[in-house]
Length: 257
Image (cartoon, rainbow, N blue to C red; front, side, top):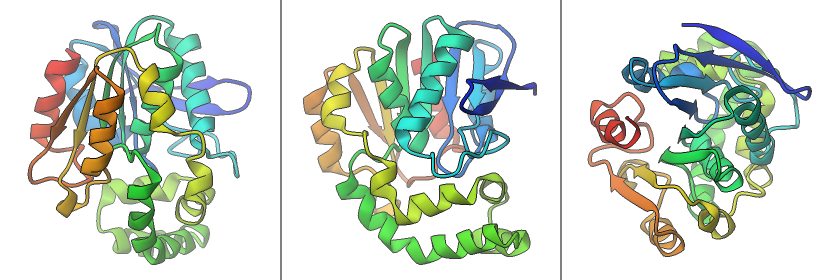
C-alpha cells in the first residue's frame, strides 16, 4: 500500500492513498492509532472508491508536535488536507477520536463533506470523563513504558499487537494529554454547536454501554434532537472496539458505496 507525505507547513502528515477507483473517501483513525488501524474497512473499499487514510499528527509516521494535540489542531490538519489534496466532494469516516474530528470537519466543510460515518465518537465530557478516570492508572503505565522505550512491557500490558504498534509509534505527549488533560484536549468539540452545522446524511455506530461504549443513550437522544440527518445503529455484542468486526463493516458499506 502506497504511503505519501503531506506538508501543510505546520506539520507533515503521513497518509495512504489507493487507486482512483471511484469517488474519494477519507478515513480517520482513533486516538493512539494509525491509518493501518482501519485496514479491514480500507480493504473492502479499494475496488470501488478512491481511498485516503491519514496518520493524525503525533501518530504513526506523521510529525510529532508536542503540546499541540488538541482536537482543533487535528481538525485544522484534516481541513487543510481535504482542501489541498482532495478538493472534491467526499465521504468522511472516523473512529473514536477520528469520529470527533470528522464531525468537526463536516461542520466546517459542508460544501465538500457529502456523507459522514462515525464509529464510537465520544460525544460529551459527561460520558467520557468517568471512563478516562477509570483508565488513568493503566494510561500512566503505558506513558512510562513509552517514555522509557520499554516496548516489550508495553506489548505485554496491552496484549494486542495492532494497538501496541500504534501506541509505540505515537508521541508520548499524545498519551499524557489524553489521560491528564482530556478536557483541554477536547476544547472546541461541542455537539450543541457542531451537529446543527452538519448538512449531509450521517451514520453513527455505537456499541453497547455495558460492553464499554463511549456513547450514552442521553448523548444519542440529544444528537437526534439536534439533527434530522443522523441515522444511529447500536452494534449488539460490541463495545468501543469494533473496527475489525465483520458486522460493523457490513453496516458501513451500504452507506458509503
